Structures are given as structure tokens and as C-alpha cells.
Length: 454
Image (cartoon, rainbow, N blue to C red; front, side):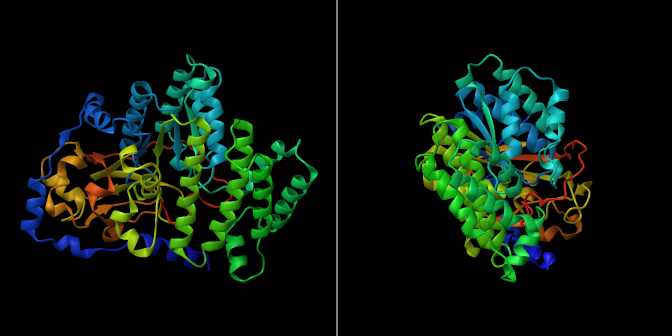
């Protein structure tokens, strides 16, 4: 039953598109000839992206996998420049709220060294642990801590998780904030704990029980969220303590809905997850004030506007689309990432140990293959420079690697995309390398990115 749940949602997102591999050579050549691009050799070459970002309030930085070093290191390079040169206030990641909030407290606290940063990231102990427990992220966390030492408390850069996972941990994190609240709210929290207790922190067990109509905790989490939200003024809290209390209750609310929908609708559960991440993003901007700016780190499938991929055919939305619709396209800048070949950290099955895998050369006719054909070397492409190329106005296969990866099934790893509309810029690597995971023993809890793989 669990495998059926996973396969249903995963197949909704990824489509095997053999058609693009047989693209007419004349069309492919026309596309290649119209691909204006800029070399990427040093951080100074990022000037073209930094300048194009302009006054955007929301910058979304993607990745074509959760296990590629270059995606992490170059996102970090862009992030440092946006903080130093454009005054961005916080980073929001495709990670759990509770664990990421501990990173936020770490970087805003006293001076720490890189060893402390590595030990801190071991708390990301839900499979796939390597997604945030890696040395590339540790380097950024160390830099953020150092950067914040010279800043006043209200000027320190923050670090937050957007994701909907870790319902059980959020309920535990909520407990200290309830001490001074009315007994009626404490009783509601106890009811939620009691309702979820039989499932042993296992989202799959809960989803299956819902499918069998054996149990449902929807009413309890809805009542708890409503009570806390009303107690805090029926709006996004203006103090961090109350915000954190709200957020833990919101994670419980939306995680229950997410797990409940896994068994019935792949698109539905995906939309709940990206809807929650978008809601959290908006709340964080509200907390930080009208002039605040955010940098988002997520997979391409979340940040690249879903309306310009085959996701729209399945009724799926994502963070990039919602951000553009909410803040206006001129206030949002999306950067996609990809590579032609190399290596990646991924697993062969759900909950399996990670491995360093070879990433084969991109399939002929794909976006990455065409970037390879126009000349070796890493590249930056700006959508406003290639958008008028008529050959790019149709969908082209663009590689997306999940946490479960089978290089021998390469045709199923491409998302048909209108690239100049999906992103505002694209960073391409001729050869990419696997990131460096921090060894962590995974908890026996629901995997992050479950069940989509992204």
C-alpha cells in the first residue's frame, strides 16, 4: 500500500517524454543559435544576475537535484551577494520549520566555528538527511553566523524552513509556548497529541488509516489552529515568540491535510505542500515588515513557475507560480539550475542509504543537451535575452533529479518546460559534482520530500 501511494504521486509529477529526444535537427539548431549566454567562471560573473534582480523582493534559487555541490555553492555565492549588496533579510529553505528555526537561533547567537555548524546540521536527521546535513550548507551557516556578529539584533539575517513536514515534532515544539495560554487551548493541544499518538510519528500509517476510514484528526488540528490564531489577534503575529507558536500549529494543521490527501490525489497533496510553503513565505515577510526581502532555496520543481511546465496539465501549482501571482512578476526573480553530466548524491529507493551516482550525459534534444552543444563551459542565461527566440516558446525537456534516482531510466527524469517563462535566469554547469553529506543516522520518521521525491 505504501509503495502504491509513493508511485501514484511520483508518476503525476514526472512524465517520460520521448518526443523531445527526436526533435528535428533544424529546430534544435535554431534554438542553439539563439541562445545568448554569459560565461560563469568566478563570483564576479554573477553581476549579470545581481543586476537583473534589481529591486525584486523575492529571489527564488532552484536546483535540479538535492545532491549536487555546485547548486549549493553557487546559490550560497548569490545569497552572500544579495545580503551584502541588496540588504536581503532572511533565507527560507525547502526544509522543516522546527529544525531550521534552530539554525536561525544558531546564526543569530554568539560566534561559532565550522565544527559547531557541522554538529548543528546533524539535527536534519530525517531521510534524505543529505539534503541539508552537508558541508556545503555548513559553510553557509558558518558565514551567516560570522556576518551577524556585527549586526544589531533587528538587522541579523534569519534562516527559516518552509516545509509542511514534521507534524509530530512541531507539536512537541509547541508545548513550551502553551504554558501561559488558557486551559482551553492546552486541552485542545492534548487532544491533538492523543489523536496522533497511535501512529508512532509515522505519516504513512496515518494516511493508510485515513484511507480505511479508521481514524482522522482533522477536527482536532483545525480547532487548535483556530484557537491559537484567535488568541494571537487573528493575524500574523508581530512578535517572534507568538509567530513561532502560530507556525508550529500551522504545520500541524497543513501536515495533517497533506498526509490525509496522499492516498487520494498526487496533485492535491503536492498543492497542499506548496500552498503551505507559500503561506509560510508570506507570513515570514509579514513578520519582517513591508521592506523585507527573502532568498528561497528549493528544487526547480518548486521555484520554476508551474504554469510553464506539464505540471499545469495535472492541476499542480508551486511556490514560484504563487509568488509571481502574489507579489507581482516584477517583484519576483527566479533562477533555475541544471547540468549536462557529472555525479550526484541520491538513493536507489525510499529510505535507502545515499550513494554517489553518475549522472549520464543529458538526452539529445533536451535543454541541457542544447546548452552543451553551444559550447563547453559553465553558462548564465537571462530570460529577457532569449525570450524572443520563437523556438523556445514550446516545451523542452529539462532534467529533474529526485532523492530517488535511477540513471538507467533517464528518459523519465525530464520535465517539459518553457524555459524563458519558467525562470528569469538559468545557471548551467557542463559537469557537476556530488555534494558532501555529513554522516547522520536517520530517524524512523516520515521522509522529507515524501512522496514526490522533490
